[in-house]
Length: 375
Length: 213
Ligand code: SF4
Ligand code: SF4
Image (cartoon, rainbow over all chains, first blue to last red):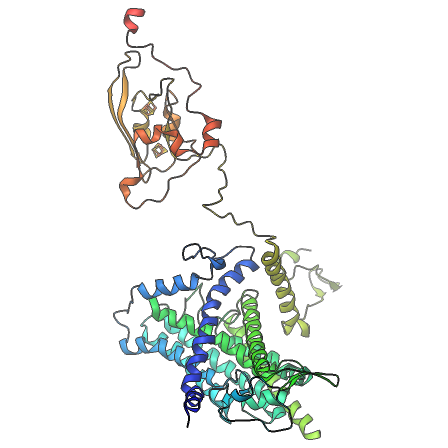
């Protein structure tokens, strides 16, 4: 192997791709969301929101507030209640942060890059030079979305363990609420995706993106509109944010992290925001065509029989940019929903989960199965 | 409509009475509001709510249409004329203090935060003046009694400023000199409007008042 081969071999290794993905995309977006949430809510409520944090004259509309927050959280007292279970108390934030990081491994963030073809237009039919190809998906496994379900359910243990270990009634209540909510909504969530699995015939996110093709009429939101609404609803419940923020319940129980302070609390906070990004990524992948740009094939735009050839490098750039745009838009939508709707009561929450989402998801599944059988 | 007042709060609409019983006028058949599917699904309501919030969002992001936030401390909203702010000591024509150290204000002060050390004054027509006059603005409850009790309009709270944040408690104590330095405690326009001199008659006739009278 030559040196270039070695470089590409290292670049293509899962660990490197994962670290780059987390550091270049996930963490910056999640950090920005902590600022965007406050700014956006302020704008929706006719306020200005945090706009003052600055480094010298650089103010950037207050974006630097997340830096100030991080510095504050690091220097705050790390308090552990006397009667708390020390080990579990320390473990809980890690338990809720680690899974959301890992889950990103199954999201295809772009097409396969062929380094030798970057400057040329890839013809659709003839084989390309595939040496040193880099697949922009960390983990290409056939059971990709099952992996996602399995991993994200683990994140729930973080809140339950935090509630249990804190030795605090309110924290325990928050933990219990978190587990009951997750249990109710995980079911509807899985079943609503089931329809997509049936139509697309795969569990592998990359294959789902390929199936959806650059034609928007093929995208998940068009073939499975009901599943989209159900999954979006259940996914917001999964992030434990308003209108489903019962585990947190600021006005009454403050939540499973009531005893946490400083960076440990910051980890719960960060996990919540990363989950928003992750949910947006999953919805873009399964329902909005993933990295597909409308009408952009591997060799360029193809609209109504005419082709506008575009080189491979630009295609990759546009596709990665498109997925980022979709994710950012969905994050914006989630924040908008969070600041629009009031909170559900626990009984309404259970009602919505078990009596509406679940039957609708089952109905959607059976309808899809029927249509698939007939066609 | 005796029952109407007892109806649950959510039925704000007029009660539609379908029929009234012949035997008892209070027994009526009324139309019940049953939720229709689009209400149950929340979706139209969600869309409507999002429409409102997003209208505000984009209106504010693009044109700052509705926000009325005042960017304190760069922008300040002037206090109303009767606002009780920081204290100041009014001056005589010769720029000395009007206060005659009568001790009315420290006596009436409910927070006990005025410290006055009286001293002889050269002008025998006035007799006394405060050698030390200090107000602890942290202890002050801003009641304004000191101003009302003063017999010679020597103390006022019309500076239009409030006590600022300090790092040490002693910094919040205003000395006589500070309270007489109107230029540094008041905004120029407020000072120009309110002046440093009182309109009340200034007492005292000078050091040789016995010989003159
Ligand atoms: S305003 Fe009231 S509390 Fe303050 S110094 Fe005057 S009398 Fe005392
Ligand atoms: S009441 Fe007026 S004159 Fe008397 S001590 Fe206070 S400020 Fe001076």
